[in-house]
Amino acid sequence: MSSGIWFGLAGSFGGHAVIWGRNTMYGTFYSLDSHKSYFEIESVRNRWGPGLGGGIGLDFYVISNVPDPWKLHGHSTSGWDFNISIGAKWGGIIKALGKSQKMAKVIKKLADSKGLTAGALKQASKMELDDYAEVAKKAREIANNMPAKGKKPSIMNVGIPVTPGLELSLFAQYGTWNVLNYRK
Image 1 (cartoon, rainbow, N blue to C red):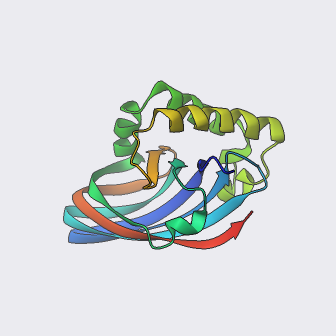
Image 2 (tube, rainbow, N blue to C red; image 1 turned 60 degrees about the vertical axis):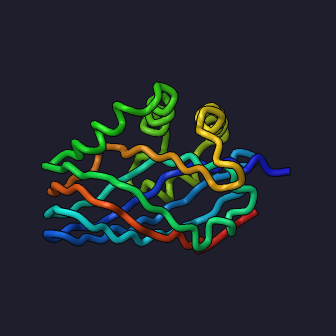
């Protein structure tokens, strides 16, 4: 039986012009149960609110309550967010400071591993088994501390402030996740 817990990296790019913006995310997420099981996802998100600028991003995700990744296909997301990017991703730094110490340890482990080298998303699939085991252990700790949402997927992410941008925006964001590939 699957734990339903997944973790991985996602890259995104987007921009905002006056009252509307769009952001697209692509990610690869690995099962806590096996380093050979993963799925790839795309999410296109529309943003409404004041803002101007654009950038690229890198995020670490932990997802729980998803025994079958196809359950995420068509999953809608919404919520309020902000971006402050002037060279560095200051919004990502501010949001990261508000996350748990456990998440900080996971990000450090990813930064020290092969997960943040050139071609970060593809390199994550080449993680050594020891690296996978350590990151999986931290992902389980995070998932166990995430608020329960019944049978709904629970998604937690934190921006890794290593990518450039030039944007200032405050917005309501609405999007849909699409599963592109799933390997059991």
